[in-house]
Amino acid sequence: MEHNISLITTIASAFGLALIFGFIAERIKLPALVGYLMAGIILGPATPGYVADVGIASQLSEIGVMLLMFGVGLHFSIKDLLAVKRIAVPGAIVQMGLATVLGTILAQTWGWTFGEGLIFGLSLSCASTVVLLKALEARGILDSMNGKIAVGWLVVEDLATVMVLVLMPPLAGVLGGNADAASTAPLWQTISLTIVQVSVFIILMLVVGKRALPWLLWHVAKTGSRELFTLSVVAVAIGIAYGASALFNVSFALGAFFAGMVMRESEFSHRAAEESLPLRDAFAVLFFVSVGMLFEPQVLWNEPLQLLAVVAIIIIGKSLAAMALVLAFRYPLNTALTIAASLAQIGEFSFILAGLGMSLGILPAAGMSLILAGAFISIALNPLVFSTIKPLRTWTLKHSRLARELESRTDPFAELPMSTERKYLEGQVVLVGYGRVGRRIAEALSARGIPYVVAEQNREMVEKLRKSGVPAVSGNAADPSVLIQAHITNAALLVIATPDPMDVRKMAEIATTLQPGIEVVVRTHSEEESKMLQNDGIGTVFFGEEELAKGMTKHVLERFKPN
Image 1: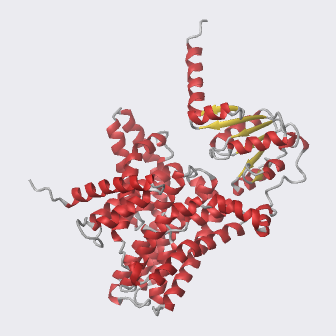
Image 2: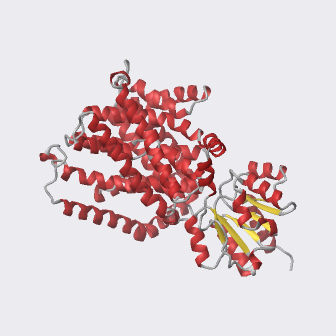
């Protein structure tokens, strides 16, 4: 029997070496991701020995991108995207523009043409959603406000990149590429067609998919077959991603993302996320291995100064531009640093852009090599960049007067209006977080006429609450000034309903310091975390599954109560 089958040998070697080098990386206190990239280098054509099939590895990694983006969609609703649109849309567009300008200028200093520099700069401007998601998940901040802004930012980047990919062929001749490869259709017609195709896809997903996909999951779940349910989840994720690309010229990643967002409407979305998790993790590993396979180490010694300049644009230029934009929108320094770290890398869309540029004769082969090398280095360094956020913020606030002024500058929604009624300033409930849990608590308080003040990081949500007559302040409640503005010193109760568990202890400590003896109520998703909070005497802790069990038990006992 012939065992030299490219697909099987590629998967076996990729997983095997990724396991070995990922384990070694973890043992020497490096992220496992670095080990996956090293496995790819060894399997790639740049090193001696066995060479895996790059084409197959690339296609397998695309499946990982689809499943990962599908999982993000399951946790990221349309409301989440709209909630950060004011910063994500202008921020992503301006940041991509600045990075493109930097890349274009750099390329022209090397003697490249404007067209070559433009495609090169565009390839450096788009960060990898896959890398970002792994970084946010590893730090438990994917569902935080900072995480939602970062994901929303990259979704906008992906949409903009799709437009660029469609416009490149008709503009190839103008940019100095192969005129024969360019589309013969007028530019306005191409743009109009793209807008129509993307709009039709989004409308179909939001109107038809929003009803059809939850209905499908419900009927599959009724069969009681776990295998069928898992199969339906994977089929929906990959099928819609492929259909979006084939029919509407939407990228695989965006197609899968919208499929997940629509399926989120189903009550089985949590189970769908759990069922797809093992496959997502496995194929995500293949993505990083495939990046390593494309890396050419000789670039390190053939063009060291050019590569250094590319890495500087990716890690420093893009990050500084993003940080300045976030601060300009009056978000705190921590949010600015998180977004900056999120964008300090490039990935899958950069490869697609560069590959199309080469096929159209616009981008030289040297440009592709520098982009791949920049991607490898930036992806490997990205976990280290994230790890510098906290110490950098602490050092900056300690040594920079400007940083302290930026952190404490006036935010129009950071203080309650002078016209706020007195009942909201004394004996009120301070409610931290206005998500799914916080909103229900607020509705119950309103129904009973109990005054409350909301502390929420989403400034757009705070603005909306104020328009509806609800007192609210924007900011992270782990910052003492936010709780002070919510008048915690006179409050009767602090309810921490935010899904982000990182700062719960700090919020409680600040509250009890400002008002000793105040009652604190906290939500948690983890039984272990619930016990730790209770042992620390934080306050009354509600663990989701435990409260659900109590509610169901009460209902059952009521049903069998003697008459």
